[in-house]
Structure formats: structure tokens, C-alpha cells
Length: 244
Image (cartoon, rainbow, N blue to C red; front, side):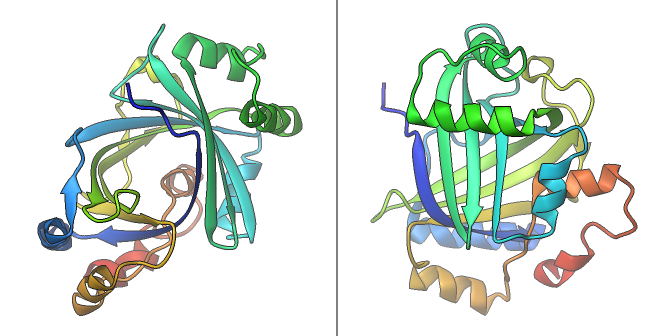
């Protein structure tokens, strides 16, 4: 079994693509990238927040520093001894720092919800302990989507992902209860995310520029929070220039 990476430091850029752009980009990048071995896979993440949703409200304001905690599984659900990831994600001045620890679903719910100790102590678990102690978060939203992930042929740490059929819910906040939810982007649209340790490859810059595909600040949990909070806005309006 391959070693599971626990610490990430990289730049991430997001783009909201319409169906024509999805088709174009997924075809063109095959000259430089390969689809990973999982093909189209489902990812579900349970986000934790304070009772007043302080973490996502702060994130929406685009501060210099922000952080979030989530419990993630790869697949439509997780229960019992299934492997899940407890992830602490921080962003400072455009750089993303992600730390995660692996445990079973039962261990994770005991740790994050029932206040039990982490199965194994580490620097990462101590950082998560501090987060839990300071914010006292509880389950706030479940976000699920179907992902296509590509990696660079010359640099396998360079990644491009396409998240489709993004759906969310604020009830039944349990990874064991499946991946159903309310759609937050139009059908056949995708959230493309470019993940790199340094500069974006020139060929990709040219591809995006030539086809007028521009970055869009898009948070799945943030978008759903704004939808369900009934704040006066049009959720996709700020991104329309990127998808027409």
C-alpha cells in the first residue's frame, strides 16, 4: 500500500467552467497529463464550524489567513472501520497548507464529535486538538462531488481536478448517510482546481488565456452557506464572466 501523504504546501487556483470549457480543457490537457487510476470518483467532506458559522463567515470575507476543519472520505459514504481523513486546511497569502491524519470512521467520530483522544498523537493531531479546543466546532455542512483528477506526466505532483455534480446538505450530517444533497452549480458545469508547488506550466497558461478562462473565487461550503442563509445575492453572478 502506498504511503499516504499527511502534509501539503501548494498554490491552488479555482475556475468555474461551463460544459463546453470542461470538454475543451479535459481533451487538451491529455497532451501533458494523465487521468489518475481512480477515474471518476466520489468525495464527501463533512465541514465543522462554530454554532454561529464564524469560520465560513470569516472565509467569505477573504482574509489574509483562514482555516477550516473537515472529515473526508473517498466514496459515497463511510462507516465503521472505513478509512477517513481528518483534515486541517489553512491558507495564508495565497499559499495553502493542508495537514491530515488517517483513522477509521468510528475513531474520527469519537475524536471530532464525542471529544475522545486521537488514536495516535502527532504534531498534526496536536494542531487539530488546539483547533477543537479553541473553536469548539460541530458538524455544519456535508459537501459531496464527483471528481476527475489528472497529474502531470513530467511532474506527478502537479495536479488538475474537475469537480462535477457538486451537492450539499445541512441535515443528516453524517458520512454514513450517503452523498445526496442540493446542487450548487448548474448541471455539467465543473469546478476546476489547479494545484502546484510553483508556477503554472506555460502550456496551461496559454490554453486558459487563449480560451478566455479566468480564475474564480469559489468555495463549495461558502457558496452553500450563502444559499441556505438566504443572503441577497445571485450565487453565480460573480463568476459569469468565467463561464460565458
